[in-house]
Structure formats: structure tokens, C-alpha cells
Image (tube, rainbow, N blue to C red; front, side, top):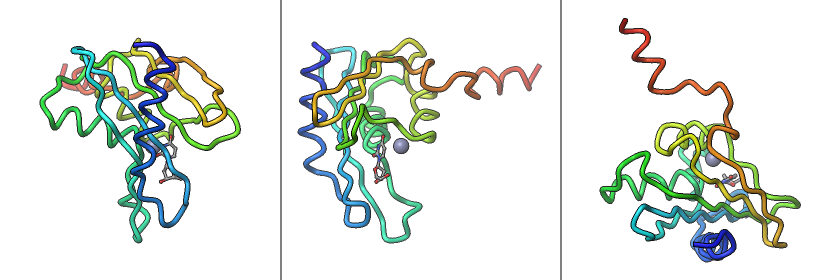
Length: 137
Ligand SMILES: O=c1ccn([C@H]2C[C@H](O)[C@@H](CO)O2)c(=O)[nH]1
Ligand SMILES: [Zn+2]
């Protein structure tokens, strides 16, 4: 699937965002190995902390639906930012856990700006599952 098409799917997903506090709608579209798209939006909470970002919603939904961590092909994320949106640190850490290091991450905004990167580029030096194995040696 073309980057622009996955971005279009992310824009669709953003229309379901629940953002009574920030009014900042974000959408994500995660492409699985079979070519199917899993949608995510940000879902906020009056206690603020329990809020969930669009990217995490998409990844958690796909895993909960039985898709193997590490098997995804790409994720697109959009928000009404000036330049391409920048995923938060928590979402970058969750990407490291559930996506391959070289998986494509397409970041966009509503003006059509696009930045294509990878999970590893978004969180260099990440603490990952391998570090836990090292501790057992
Ligand atoms: O990449 C991002 C950046 C921010 N947000 C959400 C979190 C919060 O609901 C709102 C403002 O930070 O945007 C996302 O969902 N994804
Ligand atoms: Zn986030």
C-alpha cells in the first residue's frame, strides 16, 4: 500500500478521536502482514494519565485481535500539526516492543507534509526485550 493511502486511512481514524481536553485529534493506521489496516485514535480521560494515543490504540487493537508482534508492515500517524506529527516517547517505546526495528513509520499532518522513518530511528538506544535476556546471563 502506498504511503499516501495509509495516511488517508489514518485521517479517517482521527475522526473517531475522543479529545474533550486537548481537542487535538490524532489518527493512526497500522498495516498488517495480510494487507489489512488496523485503526487507532487518541482517547482521553478526565484523570489525564489514562489517556491513550492513536498509535498505541492501533497497535494494541491489532495485537488483541491476534496479530503477532513484529509482523506489521507500516504505521501511518497524522495530527493537525504544523509539520509531520511527532509520536510521544511512550508510543516510541511501544513501537520498539511490538514492531520490527526497520518497520516503516509514516508521519504526516493535514497539510500533506510527510516524513518517512523507522521504529529504530525514532528511538535510538531503546531499552528492549534483549536487555532483559542479558540480565539473566
Ligand atoms: O503522536 C501523537 C501525539 C499526541 N497524541 C495525542 C495525545 C493527547 O490525546 C493529544 C495531545 O497530546 O494528542 C497522539 O495520540 N499521538
Ligand atoms: Zn503517544
